[in-house]
Length: 252
Image (tube, rainbow, N blue to C red; front, side, top):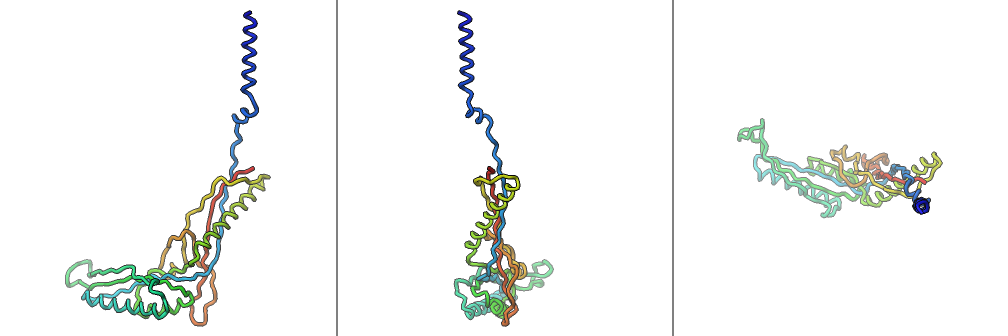
């Protein structure tokens, strides 16, 4: 009787071990580790600028604040007259900033060292006809503009070109992943993740004319260009709209 009980216990242990073992459980216990591959794609699209943003300043001074302001108003009106002569709509001409500053010599604040009141207005103008930039810029300087804070050549269809550049960048990342995996006899599968690198736009003209960087979610710069026209010496170049993305794929 005791022997039969021992045999039954041993048989139950074998059955339990057999039931709990299966190919599915063996596979679950040792999962195949993922094999990702990450590549970066870059793309660039060149387009011609179709507008110019000019950030200008008019500054006057006099020991009389009223006189300094009067002279400044007169010059600003001359600048506005130039914009009207070139057919620029009023909504594309804005006075952004007004500043009045008393200045003194030698860092003192005595009446003897008082230079005068400096009145400055900042004007932002958008020129839609890029071909007229040379003449327009000259006319503004002759009208009394004495500060140039920035001149930015831009495209009004930036989003369209940005989307095109991003699509090309994704395609470039996929082609690179295929090439790298193919060298190892593998194939890429579905993408795991995708990210777009931070970017902004920079124009060669901006630095040349005294401007700076502005963020517009793409990189823009001017390269190449067309021949100068017979009427002027300015030749607009092209804006390079670029995009960069990183994509992680599964490898089959």
